[in-house]
Structure formats: structure tokens, C-alpha cells
Length: 288
Image (cartoon, rainbow, N blue to C red; front, side, top):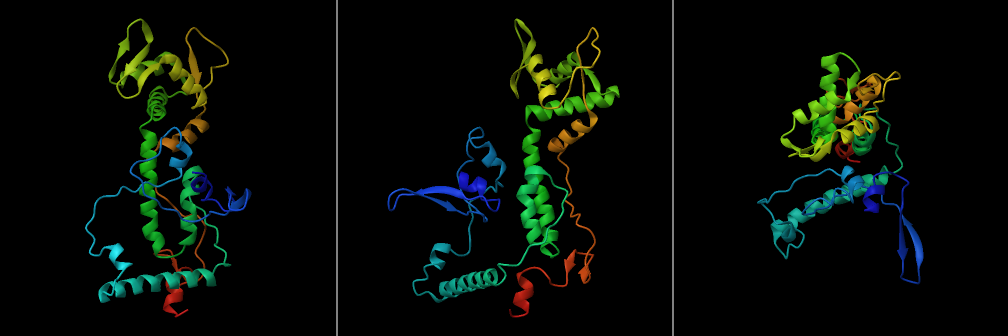
């Protein structure tokens, strides 16, 4: 798990103990693209940070034209051997390209992504910037981000965010009564009241919740604070700027934009491409 969590940032090696000749501590640089298969995701509590760093691609049973196990072991079959030669040729060209351009710097790029989303997707956008591939990448990345945000939108915090957002809009005020928040919260959930506990509610979706829990979330997560002057009712004051920032976590709509300024000379502004200054195709076409 350390390899996967550290391996998406350069300069973050993983420490391993080599026991070949005694015990020797070694550092391994593991920054690279990683893909793996599993029957299920790791536990959401034990591997929360890990799950945030992966893109889940559901797999289904397929019917490929060729069996890869036969292609890599042709056993004298001419068709399989030809396919294997094509794979090896592509691999060798990619390796040569990598060696020839290893020292080239990848220009920075500015995108309208923040935090974990930026960490996950900015590197690949940097690699393919100003190429035709970028036009295909942007909608795909937007779809993955929307799916991840959808997962956040199904949490209790996201549900409360929607409740508070509607109350702030309807009341035209950033000061809300805690009793009003509680009433709106349980009013939109299927469930039943708990006998002997008037300020608790057994919801079908989120389990047992209480007004005390909801009020604490308002303070700890949404940054609400009691007003300076207290009245007869308990109220909370929300800060507009902070509440709007929190909303970026739960809002699902997103259009990824590259905001790195104007195109350089020779660029095709219609599709965001340069006349061949980035990418493997340019070198392959020139016979490099």
C-alpha cells in the first residue's frame, strides 16, 4: 500500500529491508504508472487514503479475438508470431523514445482542479498538453471525477450540505436555527423516531442520527459558529466564503478547463494542438 500511495509523487521512495546478506535498508523510487486487478476494493476504513488515489475501472467478461497467452507463446504459429512481433516492435520503439527523451522537461499546465483531483489527473494532462489526445482526455477525466464526487454526494455530510444550502437560500440569511436544521434533516429521510429519545432518529439510509451530531457536524465540517449575541433560541452562523468552498466537494457538475494562457506560434486554436511539438507520433512520422 505504501508503494501505491507514495508512487504517484516524484521523490517519494519506499523503504524496504533486504535480507539477502543480513539486513540492509534500501530505498526504491516507485514513481510510475500502476495498474492492478482485484475482486473488490480494500476496506474503506483501513485504506481510505489508498482508495482516494485510485481510479476504479469495472471489468466484465469479454470475448477477445486473440488469446494473449497464445500470442506471447506462438509455438510456431505464424499468425501468433506476427502479432507478437508487432507487440515487441511497439514496445521497443516506446523504450527507445523514452531513452532518447528522458532528460526533456515536461512544461507545467494550469487546470481548474484542486487537491486530490489535481494530484490524480494533472500529471497526465501535462504529458498530453497541446496534442489531439487532450480533446479525448478531458471528457474522460471529467467523467471519472464526477463518479468520485458522486460517491461523496451519497454521504451524510453531503446530504446535510444540501439541506443547509436550501435553508440558506430560502431564508436569505447565513444565520440558521439548529432546530430548523434538525427538522429539515429528518424530514427528508425515511425512518422513525426513537422512543424515549426525542432528539434522535433512526434513518434507513444513515442509521441512527441525533440533533447533537448534526449540530457538531455544522461546526466541525461546515465551519458554523454561534452568533456573538445569544437569544432564546440556539442559532448558528455560516461563513459564505467557507461554505462555498466546501460546496466544491459535493457539487457534481464539472467542466475541466486548461487555463495556461494563449497558444504559442504554430498552434491550432480550434483543437488545442501544436504543429507537432509534443508526443510520440511526431517522432515516428519523421522517422526518428
